Length: 410
Image 1 (cartoon, one colour):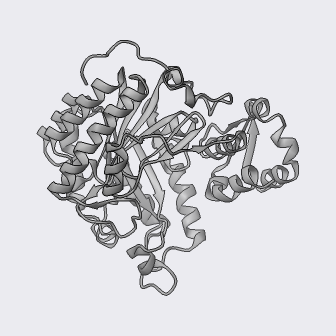
Image 2 (spheres, one colour; image 1 turned 90 degrees about the vertical axis):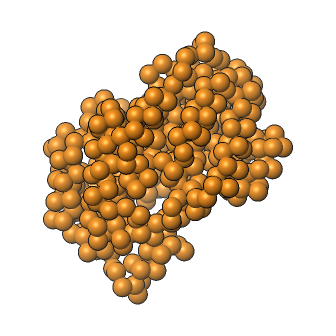
């Protein structure tokens, strides 16, 4: 990763316009920013995906790479070389970035920001674009110490249905190569609730995945986004109907219990980790830490300011070359911050600290929402213990509805 350049400065001291009289969460800028870099390139678009991405080509990538390096330098100057807590390359498919260009990005970050010794540095990778031991060794030499491998399924039938560009065999080859290279922190991403999937097939699938002994497992329910191929395939009238809601509920509950029995802590609705391997970057989001997003369509929130990078390359070009980074922003109110605190905290197994919430909000959430909270408790959807309000596993199944009622209904 390179040497550490001094101690850096707190973000809000470097950029006074970003201070917040009400803390966003447990972040405290003494620990540094979360840094996210969006790589908007894929070999092809998966059938379920509606994230911003485009097909990889050398010319557009070179354009993107040049602008990203400029944006890194601009933010380093604007925030006066702030400390970083984590770095996360997401996409898209970050493993498509050639090693020489990735090295330039990491050196640019080292120059513009203050990197923390032992900080978590994550790369999302797809099995088809990350196969060689030498590739993974090069990543480790640059400072990467965490890999998030987008396996999604170990069934070739499911992978084809999802439009994934790799096979189950490629996943095993990529995982084994990363281990051989020295990666000791590997997360595997899975999608459940696929057409034809049932509780038994899902548990059998998890059995095969846990036998690989990853440190982290992200397990996401298939969501049919509009204007995607799978929305047409699996939506009303489609040829590939999804499992019933009851079956999906059983898959979530029993799947989570299976992973916990295998030694994975269920620390967030969709995330499981062995002790000591919780994603620090993602946990930072849920704890309300400040985060800076770089690259097209990336989102940032620092203090009370939230800003969005332009989605398309020509607009992103004008944004970066014009030096407009962070100039156009949304101001977050106290009410906005409180609602987000509830929303994010209730996604985690730790839950919402009721005392802290009362101090910030000026009212007791349990008393104000007494009727709703009593009903949710009777239905075994929430639990209150040791000063925290938490969702049960049954509550996590309908977390969006509960969070909306608690946080957004006056």
